[in-house]
Length: 488
Image (cartoon, rainbow, N blue to C red; front, top):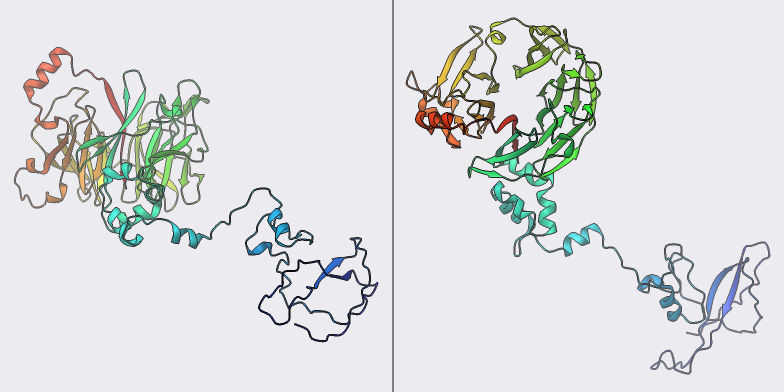
């Protein structure tokens, strides 16, 4: 459009900018074929730096076409409108210099625009075709845990969903999470292996192998934090001696991970979990050839270890339990005498204990719903209950179907499982005791409280035991080292 404008004044020498007027030669093709004004020259006004040597010849012009107002941040060669390569920009505006915007890098290959995070979520395929993602997640969280390993193989979106905390926190909040039993055992060659048992389908599930540093370790600890992380810590390597190593297995990702090392090397020590913090105390250190008094705690929220008060006496614990918010330990002292101590986290103090609880306490024990239970026989077919009022183990729950005294039938662990007591034996047989119905029996037999969910258990007859003993078939092939319950 032609309209009069004042002639541009020559730039001052004091400024660092100069105005250059370019009139590129265009073809005879009219810019606007339907325009009555016909062909007109296009004038580009460009600011150039004085550092560039530009020879300008003055031209006599009565009229100059004023360029349209543009944003100073826009690229005049219009590279930012779709042509992201230098070659494409040069073709688009012939006769002009290349754009010097720093965010456009010269490349012979076209670059892709990375979509925003919201755009990616909108463009990705749904979890279940035909359903919004929230309804799809509501369906997937109800799939039994035994199928989760297969669900992770469907696609990347399902894999990311099933290894994240959101998926399993929903299952836990809706009370549909499942508890599995994890058994760590040692064979006759001293090698460590482990297995998971699904009590719903009563099937043993495969697991990734134990890391190499714990495949032959002795005297290491085992505990569960956050309900889904199984920790292995400390122990004695046959070649390297006592260790500070800490690793953990996640039931959500089905993988092993590293954790910060302990502050002190130790093996054959005591450990427990209070308020989701891991405590270790006592044990031995091969480097100093003596029992330890030191104790430490690991906080998973801070992801670090810290020392707590030392024990009253150095001890190698062989049994321990958390009861009423306190940690009770029983073990051997420096002179191989039996000692008992209790730790109170509230005031970070250790005290010796001599009451009736520890006097009759010798077999694996656990707490369930605020009550303390312990095995009363080697095969785990009789359970004792601690009475705090009388300070004695006066109550018993007897199945009256004892299996025998062989090492293979020995009960190695007593753990809570889905509100019941779970007894695991060295031959991998598992029994459940529903102690919640104990008060409803009113003096009747407690045999109906017992249930076998794996192995021959209490249904193995005396005759079968006898023939097995004579044939030597039930000699100990492997024994259980640790047993824990993980939720997912």
